[in-house]
Structures are given as structure tokens and as C-alpha cells.
Image 1 (spheres, rainbow, N blue to C red):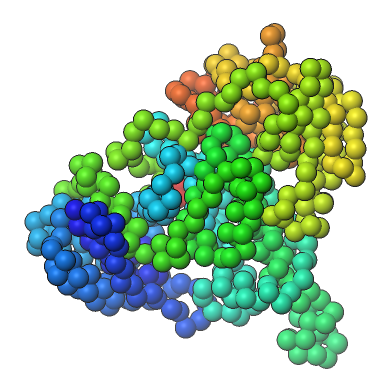
Image 2: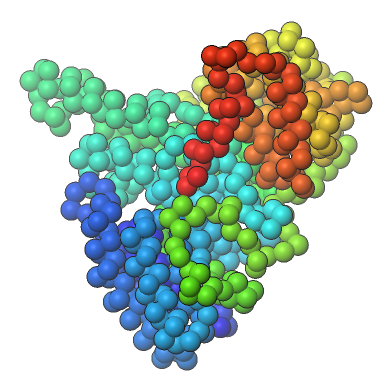
Length: 550
């Protein structure tokens, strides 16, 4: 089969031809380059209108010389509406003229499927790191499930906001990468909540650090380029890369740990960054997982990935009538029925009755008959200063929060010893297995009750996944409070609920009844809310809506 793909979600007008017999893919692209600042939607649409006919014509000439076109695929969303409509119109016209099937492709699913196609992995965790997006996804129960995602902006857009602030042109990522080669590490905020993450704090701090440097220099009579009394812009760029990419690498490792998968695929234009790929490869090597990033032409926005996925969908009979091919600017990857895959899941059945050293997302755990030694070993992928701070702070917080949670009637392991310099805890061994191995509505309800007790005391677990609950003969235990903290705000409590429900939805069979039982348990234990008080459950709907394209 030979499929012509058309890509036009935002800035890149692209057409490609993929031949399933030879696995060859030829791509013709024409990218929009704004004169200043970021992408201007009107200008991007004007560029798309000019460029799409040219790139499609080139692709058609190639395909006809190779033997013809069997199907036409196009990026149906997500993206900028005017750009999507131009690309879709071209695809419809071509499919109608040739009388071949039309395939509507989700742009984000194409980013991860091209990685799977070139890697040959069985069922990996997929990290999409692109301009407008940052998702962790895994195939489970007929769809790609969102295991974690940004709670504000996409990773590329976050970096572009900083570069626009300092007067650099689009795209900003390569400029930050180049500047960081001449800089030194500087500390910035680091925000990970389970497998969710946020870039707004680190961006604001980075812009403020640069502004302070400019202000200090100008106050002393210097030019805006002489940031001698502030943070040099090169140092801020190092800090940006080290924090943002470490966050993405950490949540990727947490997703591997949650699902039990030992395969990670990278997709999206930000994946062209050498430092990000280095971090992900280092993390996977440490935990014995396989890592794959496609070649750069498949990482940035391109029609090759649209053609490759379009071929898989066409072979599965997943095509569209032209009358039903409207674009969707808010087309989430977890809304796509995955018709071209079956009989697989990113969730690997865990081994039962394990003893000895076990590697989690954050630590190596030595399991004895009565005790557990949890060692937060240095992470080679993180900058040494950041790594030391995170390991120390999380060890101290975990020991403290385990005791405080138990005082609120939440079963947790006893803390026998804390070695802060070595980031090591010696704990009571509790439970026979993780909740992931023995999940039921009754146990989900109990977890809801436990979190309600924590929140009522102003405590936040931070990472209450099904891997961080242990199942004993007569009770459940909450473990791993390393991302926990003190807060009485409904926003933070709602994030706890969101993290647990995400871990259930991404790995469990029939998650709806489990989530319903979990929320019932939470609501029953939290008690009636004051008329003026906002509850975590009411805030939860808002938190869910912050995911991309909700």
C-alpha cells in the first residue's frame, strides 16, 4: 500500500508518501518562520494556504512515479483550526479526485506511533514532548491512555515563552540548547505531582532571573547585555534544560514503574534536543529498559508520521467519508479508538511474592523478612546539585509524613531509621503485594477514605498510585510519601485524587467502577463540606479540565 499524508496542524506544511512494501517514506515540508516572536495564527494559516499546494503536488508526483496512491491521510487535529482546515481540504480534494479512501489521523497519536513503528517495541510507554503538548501515554484496553501530562502548557511552548521574553525568535528550543553549552547550572522550581507536571513556575522564575540581571545591570549604568549582577542568560538556559527535562525524565520513569513496561519511546519536536535524549537514555539504561527516539525528520512536525499511521488505519478499515471528515482542533489522543492494535497492554502483570532488591521509580528497595531498606540512589541523568537536593528533601519529607499520616489513622510503615546524607530509610515491611495486583472496588474505596483522612489533617501524599498502596491480610497501607507535603488547599487535595484515578484508568480493567468506589469512599470520609468551603471533589473536575485540549 502507498499512502500520501498531509500535515498542517500549526507551523509546518508537509506532505509525504509512505510505501508499506518497502517501508520507505519520502517527506516534503515547508515550515513557517515568523519574523519575530512566536507563531501568529493568521500568518501561519496564510503560509499553510501558500505551501500546502506546493508540497502536496511534489508528493503526488513522487507517488505517481512510484506506482500511484492507495489512500490519503491528513492530520485531523489537534492544532490551529484555520491551518487544519486548509490541510484537510487539500486531502479531501485529492482523495475525491483519485477515488481512494480518506483517513483522519490524530497528530499526537502519530507522534508516538512513528516511534513505535521505527523501534519495533511491543507495548511501550510513550513520551510526547512537542510544542503544544507534553503527554505520557500507553496503549491499554483499546485506546492510548494518558498516564501523565502537563497541567498548563506544552513543553515547547513553555520554552518559547522564555525565548520570546528575552527577544529571541521562534523556535526557541534550539537557541536555549545552544546558549546552555556556555552556561552554568542555576536553580529553578521543580514541579512533579505523581506523573503530572507543570512548567509555569519554572518559566516565571527563569524570566524573573533574567529580568533581575538586566535591572541590576541597567541600575549600575550598564547595557541590557551586561548582566554581571544578575543571572547570565546562558546559566538560566542551563537551569531550564536541567529542570524541565529532568521533570520529563522522572515522570517517564514513574510511568515505567507504574505499568511495569521496560520500553520507552520519545516523540515530538522537543525530542530533537540532545540533552533530553541523553537524560532519557541514561534513565532507561539504569533501570534496564530500552529507549528509542526516531530520527529527527520524524520527531518534528511532519507528514511522514501521518502517512505511516494512515497506512495502518487504512489497512484496518478505519477510513472516513468526506462528509464526516471535519477537523477537531481539540482532538485528544485518548479519544482515538485504536482500531489497528489489539491483544496488548502497556500494563504488565507484576510478579508476585518478590523479595530482595527491587527498583521503583525513585529508589532501590531491599526487601527483607521484617524490614525494607529504601535507598534513593543518585540519578545519573540529573544535574548533581538538583539530584542531591531532591534526594535529601524527599527522604526527610517521607519520614516525617509517614509518621504524621499514621497519627491520623492511616496505616503506614513504621520508620526505624533515617540516614539523610545517604538518602536512605529503614522501614517496617508491610503488605503482601501492591494494590495494582489486587485492585477491587472495596479497596479503591478504602484508599479514598485514607486520602480523606490525610487531607483533613492538611497532608498531601503527592503520588498515590496503585503501586504506592500495599495490600495486607486485613488492611491497606499507604507507602512512598516522597512527593508529599503539607497543604490544606483543595487544589492540592484534588491533585492527589487525580493522580490515583489516572493510575487506575491507565492500567486497570473496568476502571469506571473502581474510580466511582474511590470517590464514594473519599466523600463519605471527608464529611459534609462547609457551605463556603470548596471540596477536593468539586475542584477535581477543574483539574481534569486542565489537560491539553479538554
